[in-house]
Length: 100
Image (cartoon, rainbow, N blue to C red; front, side):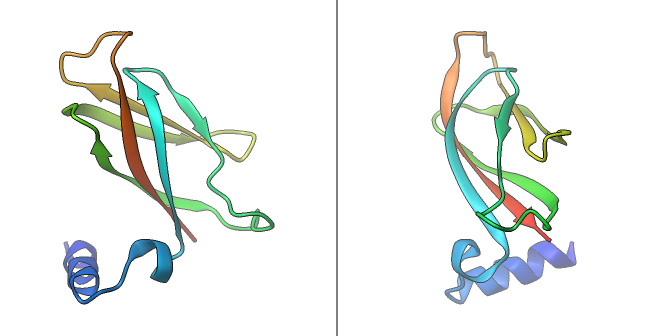
């Protein structure tokens, strides 16, 4: 994938997502299979849209499934499912929300 290759090259040369790409890095606690609402927009930037969401880490949990959906209130709903997880399984997860 050309996007991933070019992004990898840019990041290995010292660029960071947070400083050089239109995105928001979010770190929150997620519960297995429970959707969490996230407002990804910086103050005053409601004219932006979410163009992608990438899971980066899930603490010490293995990610079995990941999904995100746009919600009618402008936020996004993000769900992690952890390998072997139960409703009591939680992890501090990091995602990158790409805006455009």
